[in-house]
Each structure stands twice: as structure tokens, then as C-alpha cells.
Image 1 (cartoon, rainbow, N blue to C red):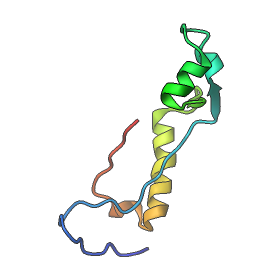
Image 2: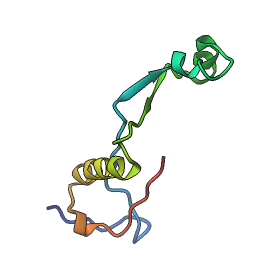
Image 3: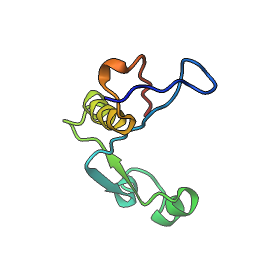
Image 4: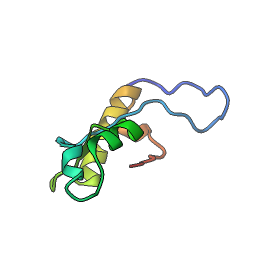
Length: 90
């Protein structure tokens, strides 16, 4: 376990590591186009999006957060008991 180094700047807040999780299911634009009136070209040209990841029934926000949190801890090289706060965004 590594020690947290003294901060330079804000004495109490810093980002030491980040982690993420992307659901397994890859959904192409064609699936989106079944429910909206648009085109693959329109979506790609305006957003650059070709596909997106959709969570399955077993991929809950909690499960995905735990996975991402584990990666963030590994990235930071610290133990869970060294954490003072967690920020989650989707």
C-alpha cells in the first residue's frame, strides 16, 4: 500500500486515480434508428457516434461502480480504507 503524498495546492482534495466501466453490449446506430427518424450519417456527422454501450439487466449502476472503483483504486495504488469520498457520474 502506498502512502498518499502531501498535496501541492488544495490541502484536502485531489484525484489520485481514475477508473471506468463500459457495459458489454455494443449497440450500433441502426438500433437507435428503429425508434427515431434519422440516419446513421446524420448521427455520425454531428456527434461522431458509431455505437454505444448499453447495460444489460445484470449490469446495475452499483455493479458498474464497484468495477470502476476497483480500477480507480488500482490506478491510484491505494487501499479502500484510505478513501475519504467517492464521486460517481454517468
